[in-house]
Amino acid sequence: MKFVSHLDMNRFMSRLVSRAGIPVWYTEGFNRHFYMNFAVPLSLGFEGLYEVMDFKLTDDDYSLSECLERMNKVCPPDIEFFKIGEPKESMKEIAFAEYRLRFEALSDEFAERLTGFLSQKSVICEKTGKKGRVKEIDIIPKIKSFSFDGNELTLILNAGNEDTLNPNLVLTAFYAQTAAPPVFCTVTRTMLFNKKLKPFE
Image (spheres, rainbow, N blue to C red):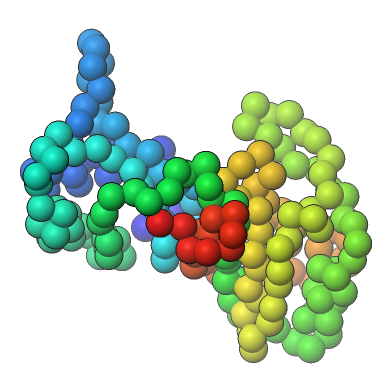
């Protein structure tokens, strides 16, 4: 499922909700479609353990527990809904995302190089925007924290706004600056946080 693009994931979720028979709200007009919004789109190839999707029901009295049960019944392997409820916060409150990078092999030398890189005061690199425009940014202020645990690196990065930082950009800048031999790793987004660094709800 991690190789399904964000656009295809939108189509997938629309069909899943339809199969589950959930009374969801559709937009008005000629081309009516199911209203749905993902908090922070997940990059292709990344896994996600805490993804937030917003949609509206047409029946205010519809059981949310039944909604959860019905949606999970029609889910394929590797997709699971674990909570459905009324939103407590606006998606604009999302400020950070936590990522777990699991390296195939992490030598002490590689870890030291990566620690030194992440501990710098400034790292300028190029970032391509949505419209294809390339601009220079400093990635260090966008890294809230980092920590190592064996072969895993945990990063808390800016998210949910124009300052969003992708861990792929962090690794690309690291390899470009240090010329360290690339090491294969998997990336899992484990949490979305609000501005107070509390789990977003």
